[in-house]
Image (cartoon, rainbow, N blue to C red; front, side, top):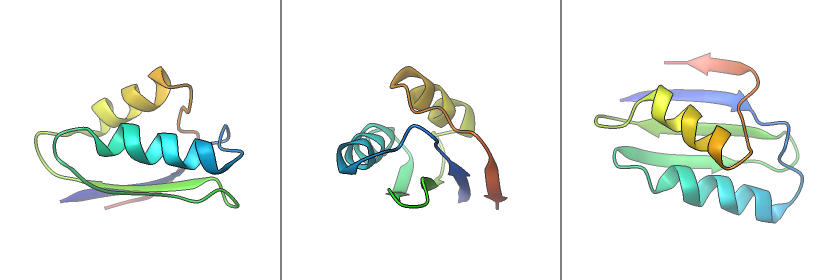
Length: 73
């Protein structure tokens, strides 16, 4: 399993958190998505068939592009 924690500067409210969690969580292979409104950090855990490229593409598509990756494992 892989995971990343990153900042999404466009998160500004609870609706933003819900949108990020639902859209990324719908990808096959994504096992967990936790977004935080205060810190604007998102942690995603996934396994195949999901990939970081797919996750980043979905975030870009819904106008919540990732900024800085904080942790990779």
